[in-house]
Image 1 (cartoon, rainbow, N blue to C red):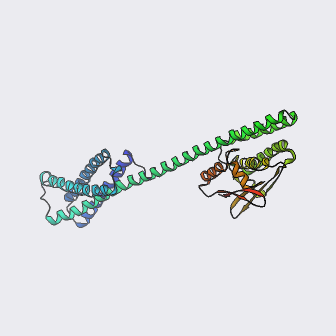
Image 2 (cartoon, one colour):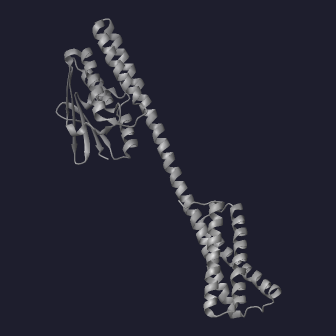
Image 3 (spheres, helix red, strand yellow):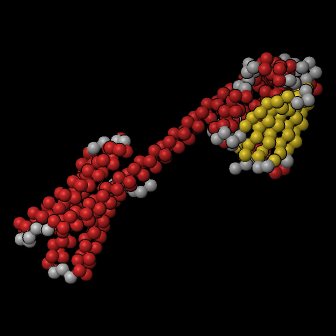
Length: 344
């Protein structure tokens, strides 16, 4: 973005018209004009051009030209270029004739000067308007991306706020049901829940954490559930070493496991198993959560038992701009939830 404002305008205005005056002086000196004529022809256009364009800039700023369409702006630039040119020539003519007592220009000289000064005024116009158009466009882009980022942050915050209460509600229910059966197990479960809740609260404002952290909390969560489900729940985690340091959305894997338990394992008398496979393939992190069950049973349950996969899909879309995805499929009497995330 090109800096604008009064200070920069005066600097550019002084340098621009100063260069024009110096160029005019050198050209006429090389052409052999008398020094009196050279000074008249150099200093007068400098002063008058400087004043005219300063007044013109003041009038431009008073107008609401930034809201004009392109056609209207072009017509204004062309019209103002002609007006500025003939105003400059008219004032120069009056000064030369009545102040310096120099005879007026011939038609050919007038036309030549009109061409030169019209080019100068047109360049002034184009530079001024192009700078402001560029700055307005740049600022609009910055504002657009800021707004987009703010909206993403707000939406992600809203989605996370849905996950945490949901997780807390289900865990408290599990503890409540276990207290009457086994106080020691309930106490152990409460300690695990405290760690899980601390993790959820600590990372609520973060978009990503290391996969190693997420796996640690998921393993705790599964240990916690195994106390409740006893032999009905079996689980296994397979993860490649290189995957553990990769960034991953907090509580997302936990939510997948929770849905797998609620929509799958809990629906069978004999329970079932959960297998988590994590690896890196072709520049993508692949996370598969497999559970005993069928898509038909999951579809019948809908989202009654959890925030659901819509939450996960929306978070992935916001975090990775549509480059990550979540797929759900049934394979060999198992429901497989697969997340695919690009390695940035």
